Image 1 (cartoon, each protein chain N blue to C red):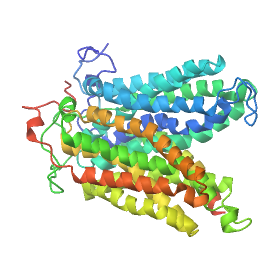
Image 2: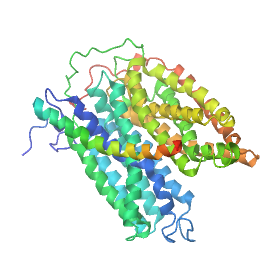
Image 3: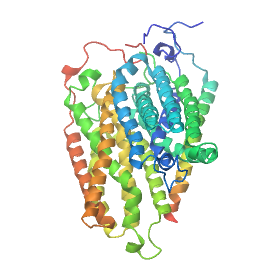
Image 4: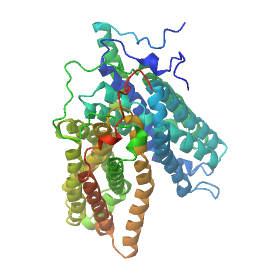
Length: 469
Length: 48
């Protein structure tokens, strides 16, 4: 991928001219994140994919795929998200956001097309390769593609800018879920469960939608700064004036401390997200609350929806707040308040305090989302703007790890308690106490973060914006 | 014909920049608001 070509996708062709309005950049980033956020709506395909042969979600045929087999599709995608973000991060920094966004669009949409073929041929391997492998690469490249560009455009509001984009990832599932259900209903008479044509339609829609981001993204000129901007190092000594390369960043303890921070935050959040629907139904059942007063399946779905809203809002709110509070104190809040709330959830359930229970879960999930959205700005504070996108990409392997480990831990703890004869809120007690313990580890890791040693800084000036590398 | 590799992208004047800004935000804002509203309606069932 030579930089000296004159392809429209090259970084050099995306340099903004004088007076360019930087508020045009967040919509470009949102176009990518709103699309790839579809991944978190994958659950709407689980039942239809498990009934392609029988045509009846309640009575799968012998040859239909099992929930376990289908679950691997999402797991592969999340693992590939982290791996591709880590592998392609430096390439992205070199070629710029437009080419990376185009690659993401091709992989993500291509994943739907190959996945549709897998559904049509009832080939699980093809579905794993399409939606999981190809789509996962699209997710990883797409997720990090606008991050360093946003940080360069908004050095004075890094949290606001990256919060807006990463909020889009949360919002993407909210669009994809009802859209996918409607498409499957529309196509149900033309293909088994309507899944394959839905995949094709989504692939086309998302490719077109992502093109908006591809063709409107711009990088600032090398010498550009916002009007009146003075670098602020008042918050803490953690904000560096140097620049650290991605290769050097992973040699620092700060990178690995933040890796642990992200791992703990995401694993704990998955503890709530994985159990939300059965948790609230089991805890506030008719048996516990009285006949006709328990939480129904429909109300539990409402609870899951409410958590999604707070996940979305938390990404923007907390990340923006971190511009004022500082990144390290913000994570102190996530973990400090998080420990209290996680430890409180079983008690609130035991005492049947539904309102407080819901409120605590909502705050927890807002901080889960906030953890994702604040970390790019934290990395930029510590390592500078030079290769922050690539460093962020490598950090996302923590997300992949949590995406696989989190559900395993949660399901193991819950099943163990049930096997011991516990029911209702008591069956989830060990899940929440364990998650609170993980947050203590995260708190300590964040507490240990200090300024990066100057020996890791790049020597001499580095090109961090349009000039390329 | 391609411009020089390092030539910056053209910028719009104030009025067209405002229009571009509005279109860009509407393009992503409308689907996002639709998704949020769908989720909000679903969430309301918890309080019924």
